[in-house]
Length: 161
Image (cartoon, rainbow, N blue to C red; front, top):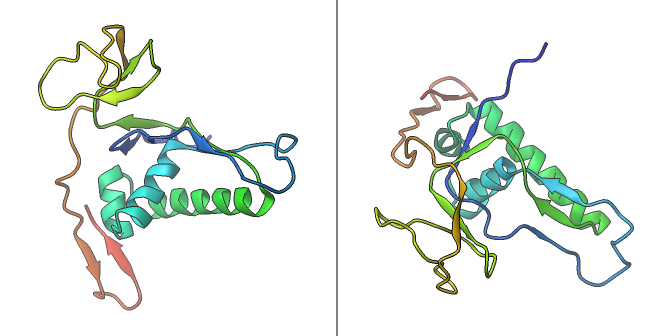
């Protein structure tokens, strides 16, 4: 029996729900590629925010080898979608968000709480028909120190948290 998967920390929900290919043959007949939220977060931390894998793993509160597996899975899925002209849909995964998220029933936008103020209206349209979207994480993770010991052992990267 496999060990249960740990919940991964995600600092923010994806700002979009996916991508569609442009031009070429119709991709409606092809299956979409599903990118999990933790895979999106791994790409965001490593490629967009330019963190190294030890820092990214500490932020997501997973081991460095686990982070590497998540990151490689995300890259394989994106490469498949690009080469085969498939849609990418970002959803799912076993994640916990670091902020309180809300959704507006009128305009459909998603937004998070800023500061300690109570959310009473949509930040986009001003509607008062707002509901909580995702549970908040119990602790922030931005201040985690990684303790990477680069170069201590020949050719190895030892990440200790």
